[in-house]
Image (cartoon, rainbow, N blue to C red; front, side, top):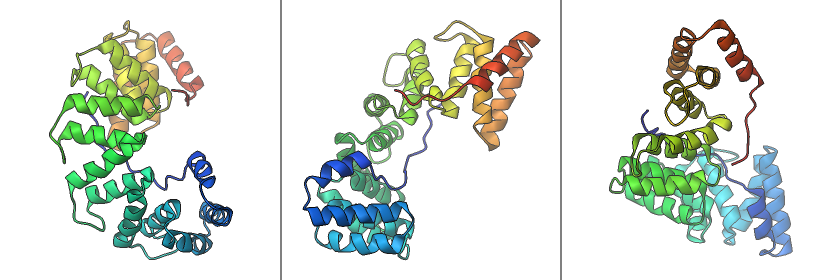
Length: 280
């Protein structure tokens, strides 16, 4: 297994709980305007959202600034303009808005609206990560793993992965499993690798399902069990595409050659009945 190096960048991070908390800190008219803008954005009425967000953003409302930045980032109701997105993200980020800090870090990482600057990306990711943003924690872990913008440091990668993983973030759970599997930044511990692979696999992460299946196939961290191995690898194949799907399907078929027809049937039944979990 090798570490997966795909950085994460979700869409608009409009978290209802955060919005609700901040509502109490705003005057009532601003609350109503912001709520109307968020509802319009949710409904895809970008012109109405822009009408509500723009005056608030000009007044320094961080949530409006963030959402206005996102609209320019995605070209929703306005022409796509990365430089303008950066301007609004920065205003919100400098007020401590973690979602804006994360997205500003991503703009620096990708060189969108600003010259590409890995160190600046790390700086903004760190600000968001220190506020508990799981996406930023995950990306910070990846950057420490690969050494972009920071000195390569496996232990530091593990530290940030763990923070995100403990929040239930499946990508970080997968990566933490890989670190334990390979002994990177932590002593090699297959049982601990299995524990984190399972958490991500149970949420439907195909890479984690495959890795968990391989652990069962080899008896690493768990008793060898071809039925469980086939089930997890089969699930991985069904939830992937392209080269990954071919790779997972090949492993599934290879396992089936070692199994009795009854074992294969049982593994297939378990796969059919499997349902993802959302718990941590």
